[in-house]
Length: 213
Image (cartoon, rainbow, N blue to C red; front, side, top):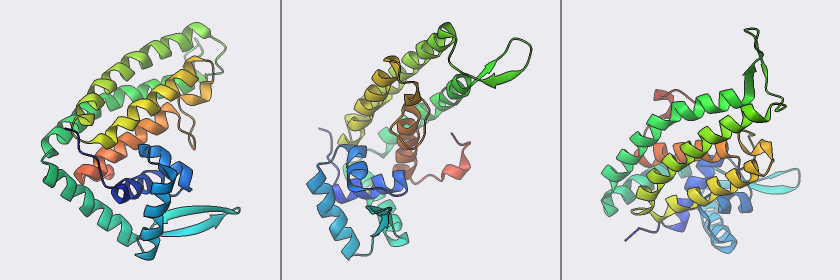
């Protein structure tokens, strides 16, 4: 049976992935209810695990060093208590093997060869070129879906990534092209980056030891 993570762990992890965010954004990462997220944030503020700041009149939250450190301990303890470290480690290694493919796909989406040996920004005026990127993404999505299927069987919190990938893919294939690589929105690359960071945080691995996205 898949293990449901504690709400505070999920909120702490979401804040780590986002850097900072408002309640709705934090809730969206792992599909938490807004009231559950608000209650967890209130308790974390009291315990100095996160702080609230107003940005242009909007309440946003950010982890404190204490919150980040305790969050890492919480993640490690969960792995040991549930006994699934080896499963998550295997999922991470399989994901990491796909990462270069995703990086190249995003580069090819953003930059195109002009036929004269020069590169230029892709203005998406060539539907055939974009379609072959879509075809590659569909295959990559299938492969990461298999990995998530395994992770979801042991830790319930991984199941929301599948729906977020699907939502981004549907937007993209319907013609909303920002949904592949645009930052500061739940684009396919944003979700990919957050899944990567989730796996790193869960296993206690430093991202600096890898090449970045």
